[in-house]
Image (cartoon, rainbow, N blue to C red; front, side):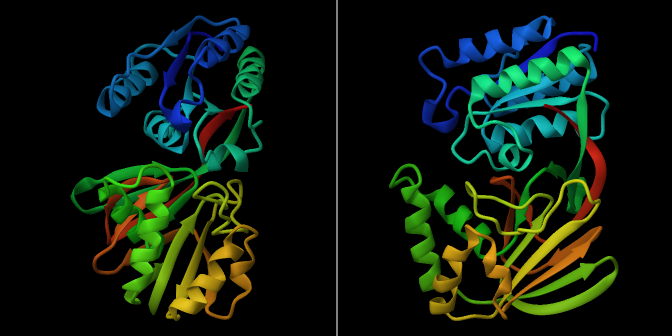
Length: 300
């Protein structure tokens, strides 16, 4: 590998997990790759996105390294997906779902050392990504899960709330949405075959987990060239509350009201849903999600 390591850092990830010298330790470990380490100027999301794209497309970066949580990872994906430039992922957020599914160490400095060793050896793994397309030419890549049901509705409500702070917002939003929960009429087109269903939950996974370890698509494998689609049909609030704890172990898919599918492409049509990918707000339905084999080269 020739060129520099372009490093995209979100210092506020994980509620400031890397404050107090943590960033310096990560950068020192990355320097072990033997490449110049350049920290990208990224004061906000728009600047971070532009800097990452320039580093990959115009500035000769040997690799892009994202230091942060799933949101930082997703932002970096938009720059490297489908290119020959590999991505290093240093998990420093609260969820770190993709990093965990990829088998990376939980400790940021340890992971930075693993990335440095891989960069030094010119070693990267090919992993699948998912590509989401919607009206008006909208396109967004994701590595973990697209939420397009109750979970997306909760995210949307939580992101509009000013209080409480942190994870408590999602708890409050979950309770509020449970009280008004209703099934929606979905049309899912799986590899060209339409399926109509009244559903509470629809999730499309390239990997298994979202939300900090909830294994919503437990059989998803980012090396098989397929998407896993999990659908929770019409159910009562009580049933929903009983199923929810089973997401941690992925056993919810054994419930008779939950079905699983696999496809290379899925179209999702429904009213009143804004999708979330890798925990980040994407766009309203309808969308088309496509599995793209080997679209990511991951260091480590």
